[in-house]
Length: 351
Ligand code: CP3
Image (cartoon, rainbow, N blue to C red):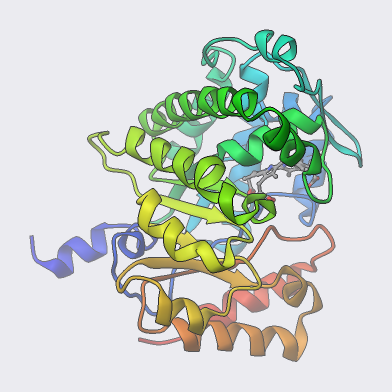
């Protein structure tokens, strides 16, 4: 097959994750299905709870497709949540309206002993059904991204039992009882690996590992709680025959991004809002794809600030495989017109 024929057959997102430079770059947005869309709010009202919503394939598939239909993004991301993994490990998880997640905290050996030894993939059957439905509804050029939370980020919610500004409860437990935290992390490495392999079997094209709380770890803890567990997950899904590429998002990793990229073996680094894209281009291994990293507040603000921010990111990353995205999730207050403007800015770039 000539490279040209192959190029047109393969989805733009996958070409870039495998190391090609494309202009314009593929585009999708973290948390692109969500409350900034009126059609999402209407759909959300049909389910009693957020987890019911995630576990109803008809609703979750529709939520996954909504932003692709509206904006023509190059990728859909499975509509689910990182906290379905603790749920399928037997920890009670609820989402209170306006308050975020609530879990029964794991602080002692007795709390840990209540978890299942293995993830209950039957409980997650609706997620795999959602993937199959989305797969058959997506245009052929649109990639489907599956995901999980990184063990440290998921553990930080399992330990605290709710969202916190700095995940202090998990950091404190990691100092006081590192053996317990290690057992929890090991359980999550195994659970996440099995879960991702099932997502791949159900039809996702790429995986993103969200480590939203990597940045709260002190230097001597990066490797143990963040890099090593993610490296084990990547190694665990690599042998799959479809060789699905992996995007790592170690939010806040800053000075240890290079080490994270080298040791985890991810195919693409998703950059948070404070990483300077020109620094990333100079410092990261040549040919490694990067994703990001528009400030969600610049998108909310729109106008000249948005235009400037988009141009600065593209100027810095023109010589590198780049997936255009935000540096963190889209904010619920974001005007639709600003997302439309972003699509126009990114897509009007010509070769
Ligand atoms: O569009 C997509 O990106 C796909 C779906 C998705 C959701 N959550 C849906 C969701 C994805 C990929 C996530 C990831 C996620 N969930 C992360 C990592 C990414 C990040 O933003 O840092 C984290 C830390 C969570 C845990 C979580 N889920 C919290 C803390 C909250 C409450 C805060 C909030 O944003 O509302 C959620 C709820 C949640 N997950 C919502 C959505 C659309 C909002 C709930 C609702 O609509 O009722």
